[in-house]
Amino acid sequence: MLKLFNTMSRKMEEFSPLNKNEVTYYACGPTVYDFAHIGNLRTYIFEDILKRTLLFNGYSVKHVINITDVGHLTSDNDTGEDKIEQSARIESKNAWEIADFYAAAFKSDLAKLNILAPDIWCKATDHIDEQIALIKKLEKKKYIYKISDGLYFDTSKFKKYGQLARLSIAGQEAGARVALNPEKRNPTDFAVWKFSPPTPSISPPYQGGDQRGGQRQMEWETPWGRGFPGWHLECSAMSMKYLGETIDIHAGGIDHIPVHHTNEIAQSEAATGKQFVRFWLHGDFLTISAEGGSAFGGDENRMGKSEGNFITLKTLAEKGFEPLVYRFFCLSAHYRSKLNFTWKALENAKNSWEKLKTKFLNLGRQTGKVDVEFLKKFIDAINEDLSIPQAMAIMWDVFSADILDADKRATILEFDKIFGLQMAEMKEEEQAVVPEEVNELVEKRRQARQKGKWEKADDLRRQIESLGWQVEDTADGERIKKVIRN
Ligand code: AMP
Ligand code: ZN
Image 1 (spheres, protein in one colour):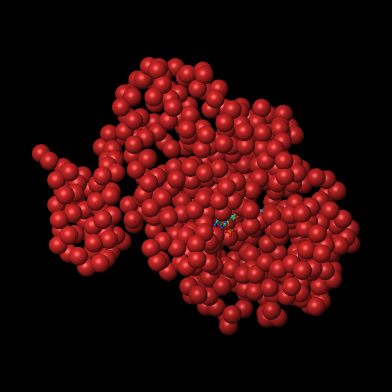
Image 2 (cartoon, rainbow, N blue to C red):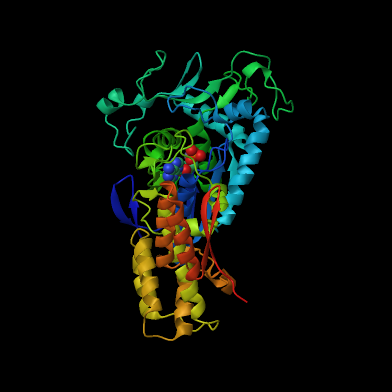
């Protein structure tokens, strides 16, 4: 029996889908104004593990990921610039090109991380009609009011407002969104449609290359006025279109609890009168600490696009870390715990990954039978709210167990259906575990160099070479390579 922690009840609950064999699963996609950072990607790795666990349990899964290509403003209180339009302005490009470019980059990142593609990708700009229809439905039920900059949802009319985030009315008043628009009836009211600044209309897709003096490129005509949808609306409209009015699972990062998901629930349930989502799952943050006096400042900070501590898969590749090493690193923490990123921690994950490869390849090429005892323990771990660190520990135990190598191989390959580390494709020539002793010497050499002790650094380099390793200094730090002897 699969148990999942439901953010709505704050409890572990036994999972079963509404329709016996098919799980409906919606994951909030990225806002495509820049490359995804590895914090975003941690969330998609968690969501992938969830999907693989559902599949492992014999369910078929209908999985939707949206692409937010309009409406996500730079501030959560419905003010600020549209992130896509801002990026277009900064990069001197067309907003449609910006969205297409970063959406493609995102899909390519998911593929590199061996994240299973969803059944449906859907873009907010392709579903304007559905969003307008949803507003009309809400308007008929008197949840919508119009002010000078747009149409707003009156949260005081939705009695269960804020339940997901445990928002109290007092908390809302005192909350972060103090910069209250004086025309809004309640601080928590949110825009479902924002009006464009008053300029001549253009119809999408916008073909021009100039920025039209900072005016919007993405906008649509509606009965209420020309403009664009609020960010939360797209997820409600697309989730309902593809998965139905009540879905089994909706997932995202924890930052979505207080505003985005809270508002999705309000407008969806107000429109249909039905429960919107049965299981809400949220992944905790990837944080990043200041390491060795890096420019990031503070420690244990959330990684974020606007926080300026932004690392992408490309940055990792430039430093010699393949995407699957990052996936392996993410598997070291439970999805509901914070995971702190440091280069040292990633280096450790890489060494552990290399060790795993060596051990796995040493099992030979024959695949025997999956060990029933180990499989049972493994299923117990993953079905207990995706306890991947425990599942990993069970995998290490398989290596040292008293069973045939071929059976170990079969068992570990079975586990890899969840881990997604592409172990069946591991190759001999990629084995290169840097011994701890060498790592320590490299660290001592780095310190010697920082202090200008060049002779000592040279001596350490010779010691490293005598152990059969080579250290190369690059603009991105040291690269350690095994000396190949003929
Ligand atoms: P966005 O593109 O900002 O809409 O974010 C895409 C996804 O990444 C959302 O599910 C966010 O909750 C998630 N996310 C953002 N920052 C982090 C972080 N530092 N760690 C983990 N997930 C994050
Ligand atoms: Zn969403």
